[in-house]
Image 1 (cartoon, rainbow, N blue to C red):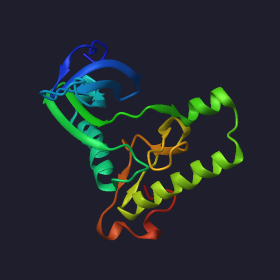
Image 2: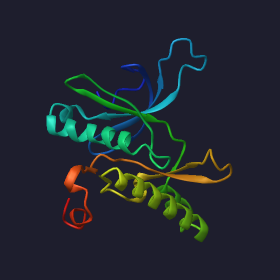
Image 3: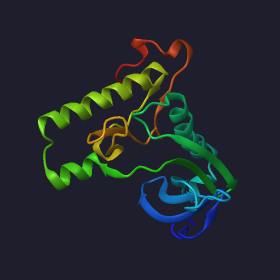
Length: 188
């Protein structure tokens, strides 16, 4: 089902096209099926877990861990979590804001090293996002150029905002776990 989703309806969303695929699933561009919306509804990104993983409760829990992490952080440097669902034993999905931009990996591949000020801005923004996540007891654990999206910054026209993606293997801490000595190397 994961390869033939274009054109299909998934809950309240119409799948338009595949954006990418990873080990656990695929991400699609979709439109929310909003009654009366003149443009067909809001554009969203829908992440769908592979059917073979959707039958494994541990994998489903890990997949929904991303929704919990994003909901808990709720920061301008993360993708906004909009919805999630389980349609049947083979269809588990997350709905997030649709981001137009380019991954940091693609930017580096296409344009080489970032200009100094651009690199400092990206690092500063990511540090702020990670600090916000850590404040909420979340350790991302998969920081890499593939998981950073550079998008137009609506608060600063003409500038970019680095958005941290893929909280799928994030560690959600609570209570006494949220101490500095328990977040060091090897503690996860």
